Image 1 (cartoon, rainbow, N blue to C red):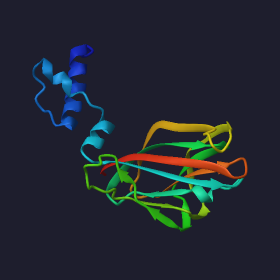
Image 2 (tube, rainbow, N blue to C red):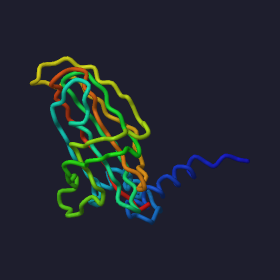
Image 3 (cartoon, rainbow, N blue to C red):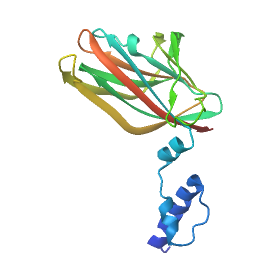
Length: 193
């Protein structure tokens, strides 16, 4: 079997990108100006959301900064995020936790401030957790020792999770030291399942 020509592979990629960018005519050299990554495109069409949840937690506790993520039925959330803390600790992502009390509901912001679209999912913090579920990412350790006026350490995931709409998800941070200031930022977009 003869491998496809490089031009053919490149053209196939361009056609895929153009499909999501709304440009279906791949003829002519000016077509290559349609390069746009998928996440960036989701921002432009008003389907990318962001939310920061922050708190101060004690050593060995994570409940104060636990975040429940519940995709809407029929909707897949493509999730990534980052976390910063002024003291050491670790964060984890769990699938299908048993959450007995959902606590405070929060609404993520649309990254396109010209769009009125809102996320179809449900998001909560200040949870009561009966069991964690299946660990799917982590622990990711943050080593930090800094005054409270400065961020001591941070971590972000470049990995994008496609969350199953039939499950709930739990993202949390466990602190090593007392009165740890921590901030978690969720970034995601949604597509039909």
